[in-house]
Image (cartoon, rainbow, N blue to C red; front, side, top):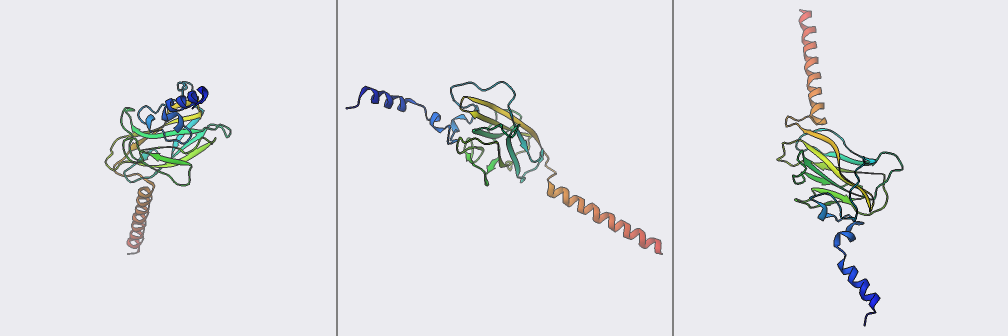
Length: 200
C-alpha cells in the first residue's frame, strides 16, 4: 500500500493543471486567447525591459516579415514567450502564420495552423527572431504582440510591436527595386533621345 506521504504527492501531481507542466516546453495553447499564462502571479504593469521589432512596417500579401524579441540590454534575458499578430482590435483571432528557421522556437495552433509561436525550453535567452507571413485575404493593419516571461513569476503580457500598415499596391523591397530600375531605364531613354535630337 501507498504511504500517506506518497499518496499525498500522487494526488497533488494529478491535481496540477497541465499548463503548469507546459511552461518549460512552450506548449501554451491555453493562453492563446488572453496571452496571459497561468503562472500563479499577475502580469507586470511596468514597462517591459524587452522590445518587439519587425523588419518592415509596410507590408503586402506574400511578404515575409522578420519579428524579433530582444532584451533592452545585453544582459536582459527571458525564459519564455508567446507571439501573435492581430488587427487593431486585440479581441480578434491571431492572423497570418509563423515560420521557424534556426531559432529555438515552435509554432502553435490557436485558431489556425502556425498562427502563434512560442519557446521550446526555459533556458535564458537575450533575443529570438522568427518570420511571420500575412494571411492571403487580409487587408487590415496589423500589430505583433508578445507575452515575454523573464522568470516563471515575472512576465509582461501583450507587449506591442510596431504597427504594420497594409499596402495592397505593394511596397515591398522587390517592388521598390523594380520601380527604381524602371525609372532609371526611362531616364536613360529620355537622355538618349535628347542627345540624338540635338545631333540633327
